[in-house]
Length: 352
Image (cartoon, rainbow, N blue to C red; front, side):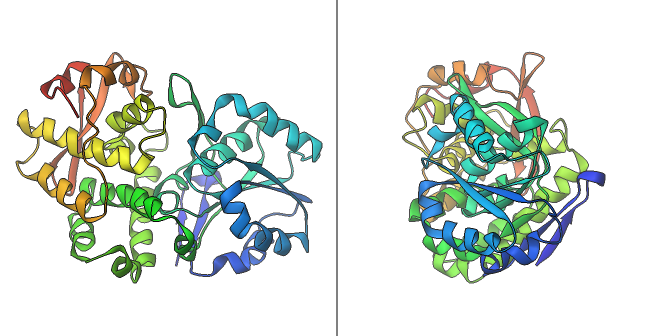
């Protein structure tokens, strides 16, 4: 399966194919004529796929790896100098290439490094987690975290291509399958009732996996369409943030230790929809449907945090514009809208 994100000079192809990791060189060679490639990955992913990738690429390029510890803590702003130093030691130039091999953390981190090292180096996304494959590897948003919040230092940096191999999901810890399903469910909630119903129809993720290529393609195609219409996240693209305003605050409240991103987003989607129903902004029953599908895919829907404790993190949210937060709400499953309000919106619930 193949599609193209049409962004003029920043256009790039996305390939979705089981086993594509065995043929990466065939895709890289036509688009990269430089000499050196730096693979940025984490210790877990590189231990599984690093040698396979490096062996292929080393037949044509000088290849080195930059490895970080797995987990959100490796997206810290203060980790950047050590990464830049390693790239300088490798003598990576502006005409060379960075490959992001890993999940959402690695894609964000490698993309930010690529956008800033020597004022910009080309990079390729090879997402290995479900969350990264359906969402974060596409769209060009790259970032690192500050102690005050998630993704507060970032850029728009589009890859030269995205290579998605659904077979990498077979080596994922079950928790991170569930994590990725949080984002898959999000797409059904905001844009596509039929996708939501399809996900709900499966008895297990194993059954869903039989159609995984099509599901990834559908999610990526929905995101591609939005990105082409709204590159810089001021209009339709904001709908992709459904559940994220609360979700990011929950992640930060627990210092990124209790909940993964997809888990926190799922809590955010359910709790925000519950608030919207109380205020008469969402169709009654939407929250219950999200709760049911969350339980089905072993995702949490409540965090037992006082809403007053989340306000500080939400006040620093980068979606906070002109003293207003842009809440993404559902009219019904499959139909969403942006609702500007302030922090008092969440006061309808004492706890999420």
